[in-house]
Length: 339
Ligand code: DAH
Image 1 (spheres, helix red, strand yellow):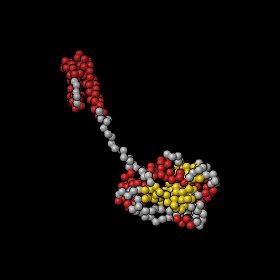
Image 2 (image 1 turned 60 degrees about the vertical axis):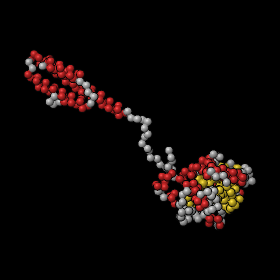
Image 3 (image 1 turned 180 degrees about the horizontal axis):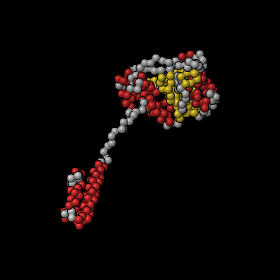
């Protein structure tokens, strides 16, 4: 009997496995319900008394060795499985992460800001709910001035002195109120007009206003600044300034860029002329400077204002202004950055 146990002991010690299944078979063989160890234990009563002690010691040793063997083999095999699992190819590309897109209005606004930042303009903002003074009167548009009708205004019912700003020129007056020249600022923002909504116009849209005031600022400075802008923004290097009228600038101009007549689209959007109007501009009217306590004898300046939607529509060939506000993902997804 003892000899038999010694043999089992040797078998257990020498046992090795490369597979968890073999380990399990080994465990059942020795430690299972009907396994060798249970059989040996049941033999115990038949063992002569003088051998009982040694027999007992031996089967306990066998049990311990077998249990330890099963445990250590299991651990080793499981660890090596994990290692295999970690032999991942870390150079493989990861799963793509869905990224969002900026709204085209924001893309174009940021481009405009960057271009003017490069030549020393800062960014300023003002309130969308404005008072009459900052939106009209201070800009040389006193009450009953006929030019007020050019911009159909939303007034606040409770107090008609308050309105939704009709242009970002209102930020000019706020900025001049708070800062002395030299002033070089651009003011992007949302504006409101009581207009019918169509493919070409909306009651909410966005503008960027520019204002430059210092000693000796001339019309030539305005022209060169705008030329620099159109080159950077559109890659077009021909502009023309047509005489126009704005109450807050004198002289005033409408700025056109030469877009070209190469494609059918060029012909369509320029109505066959090759020219496109992109903004209004002019020399800040001395009355506006006076209203803001800036001495027009000492300082001169220029201002300009442009619609962001209009520029985005040109750049991206967007046919209908309403697309900007409908939040249709099929439209917005087209502005995802390519990475
Ligand atoms: N505020 C004008 C508009 O909304 C645009 C404009 C024209 C702004 C001439 C200016 C300017 O600063 O000088 O139609």
